[in-house]
Image (cartoon, rainbow, N blue to C red; front, side, top):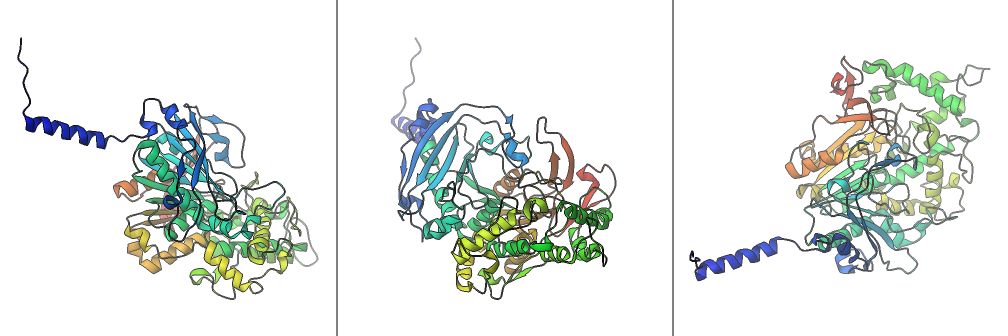
Length: 569
């Protein structure tokens, strides 16, 4: 028999120490066990204490997981279930644990903050928190695609990210205005900024419990209201997220509400533009500007030149004439109003005194629910009314309601009589709460975090120039070189608010992650236009240019990004 070697005492102790270290290094959480389903279900009823949730200056009760369900892998499916192309796609899902819960309010009259945290069994050590939309009030599930992602891309959950969403602390109720929550201070502050930071902390604690360790990187992605939320996190909670993607953000919130209501009021009486007049303006813009970028493709790429050069008065009817071939004087004034800034008689948060006018191009983008150009967002299918009716443009529905509930604090007030002057002090208060316009991102930059802002130049839900001007303000405040170390601002010509009308799809989460984790800044990003059904055929691509550059056609295949170059205005 071969004799067995014997360990010396020092060698034995070394092995024991190594085993102990290995034990410490291997995280133990409920989802890392052999039975992931049982581990998932064990999270039901789990609580997170208020001390682990609240940031300085915040208050809330504890968080409770009310539902924990295990979901087996599922396949991608496409079904008509939403107003936007991406909403028709249900991405393939991996095996995951789906947690739904709530954070208790302090005020017994306030709604709880609802949240959903999706925990993949195979975790990549990262999380993505999704922003909301409109006035929120609906739980964001975090199960979909990143805003603006290609339709054939795997959802973040399928890539191994934990995904997170919230309703921002109020729940829409039948027969009640979706803005009525603003009367409650706690719900207002949660909607403005607090809920997203609170839910972020809850999700971190749940990840620790599920996997036995904290996430290595946390990302935030949002579009529209969700884009505002992302910029709010960078400004108010610079330590919260390593990377933020803010798409078409409603950043200058107070300015948007007053300007949107003003634009709606311009359509009263003879000012309303019907579908024929909307098409007339759109066709005139294309005739004047489409081919100026080198290619007649129904996309106005050099938006600045077109905005400065196009004069809607050229469409005014000759004296004594009328009809769908021209605009009456009130309609001309309405178009000029849309393109003009809204000026305040006093400074709002961060010294802003005006909201920029809207852009140009895409006026007659087909109105498929809340997706199209003027007809969806501005003119609607009928002239605006008081009170608003479903046929009115969304900007009037939103703007007039916001003026009533947020500024006048009277749901029965006539929105046509709600002016900044009449409610000056409260307008300033709401601006300080809601507007995400601080150009000081020093705390965000000092932590090595990264920010990407994307504006759509044919967006009529909000002015793309609000976000573009914000990027310029950050550069002025911090210096262009310093701002370039952590921020990129892009503009996509011809694209409407939700991403239709021109190439708009790009893997921005991938670009953001590479920048955060490898310190490789985005270069040569491309936008794609795809069919929203398998096999998701790519129709055309364009380069995504950093503002103020725009894509000029240089020859070649007109459907390929390589045939364009980004040039300065």
